[in-house]
Length: 273
Image (cartoon, rainbow, N blue to C red; front, side):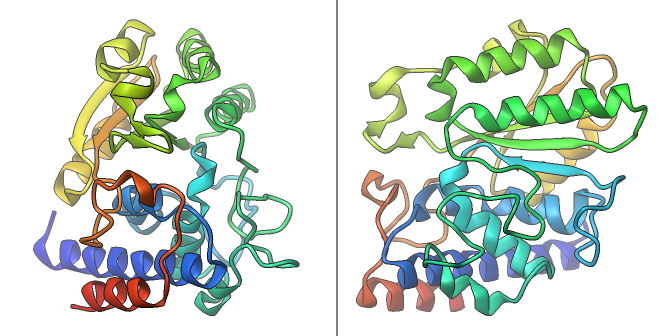
């Protein structure tokens, strides 16, 4: 990737991370850890990869994205706001009564949200269904979904993978955000789902492994995914929970805790550097 563009994407990702901190601080609740770990991938998807138009969020030929790890809605909202789907100032209304930015994505409320999500495992299933619909309708849009590694303990995730491979959905790309932590502790201690790559290959996926914070690797993975024919693609991304905020990184307690005023100030100071 050209250096200037990489620097631009890194700057966008920093602004998105600030939006995550802003929203969860104002709400005094939410899930910053997993939101921060998926930020760089969402930045690339929405600012480089996907065929989308903020002025026409429901355009029939658009690419689709489903946040299967729906509790990480702060990351999706901050990305959509930065991309122009709604005002950035609205991020301060996260989880408030009457807001368009509920605790989990709601496709009936929020511009740019392609599928409501929340219950783990449902998002990847919905995304696979969208990809099949595209095939049936002979459309050329692509469907992307982000799945958490804790979420991959759900049996429904693997049913969806079996479905995607069976129907040869080469317009489908599942990103597994492997930050190693979930609400109850390390993923390997709660219920070890690893190795994702070998399991996904056994299910019939073309698998690409990346550092989920390296824009060169992210770009190469999505470019490679578009060349795959006859099978779905999985991008297995190694990430850091809480990425970008020093005191949140690799700390399980930031799975579902909001920063207080002092922590908010420290996080924003770090992200402003």
